[in-house]
Image (tube, rainbow, N blue to C red; front, top):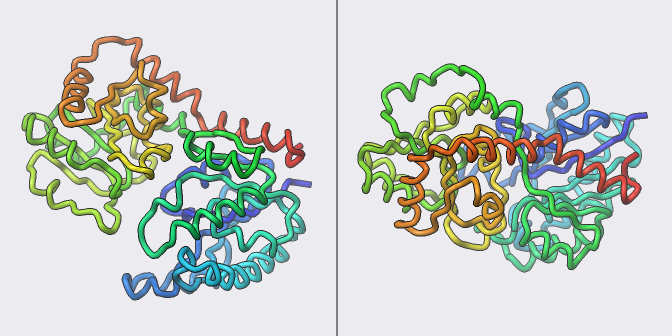
Length: 385
């Protein structure tokens, strides 16, 4: 009989794969129920289009890859990250829904795999044979309608209850290890086979890059508040002969006006995941830029490992601190002057060893290797055969 996993995710399966989808896709020897995170009942007040998402849980599950079925979650009451009582109320409804789906698929006591501290009030209501908390962010560092102390307490309760805890960054590991000795540091990874194509294959030239002149300093990822946009404008202003290309969607609260005001900064929007190597292949420099702060220090950026797999030169800020482990093969600059100097040095790179070393770092961070490490940890605690 196949292993069974119920994944309570913090990211929708569509449209872009993050750690959650990459990990679950590689547990091919398990049958998996993947639950998209719930939508707040108040969401349509800010985004009328969200009204349709409130009803998505009534639709049948979507089969993915032959071993995963994706379901939307029922809507929840807002302020669950601010008031524990609200989260507990939401948990009762969520548990009834998850248990119905499990019964439909013949799940009895699956491995319960959680990504959000809010699951702390849910897990005891769902029969399971083991509990995994995979922590990918310092959740209490996000803004919005939340009380950081409430979020931290939920995370502490969830981590202490888990059989195994994974943490993507050193700061998260140090915190969670205090609550659970079975905590493992396991950074994010890369779909190496896909992104390494940028180093080896003759890929199609993206149409929207044809009229953008080199050298290109490229960034791939969500345009979040924690990105250091001042460094981008400094590069554009100091070197008008450079082109800065940003691929990704701006999250709420991000002011893009300083970027759009500059003719040599190009915002290309979201691109299909499978096409990202086509763009990165044309970057002269790949940018990994995070402003200092609690959230930036403890992230494990997917883009960074994807850049490494392509072999292209990488310029990064010194945060998240995880990047310092790769300082022999990348260029690091934290303030305006050191960042510009790092870019200038990267553009002049003539050392083929650095290219090869970046690729090897990327290969070592493949999602296959990450999931193998996860399975070994699960085996050590009797959760996997």
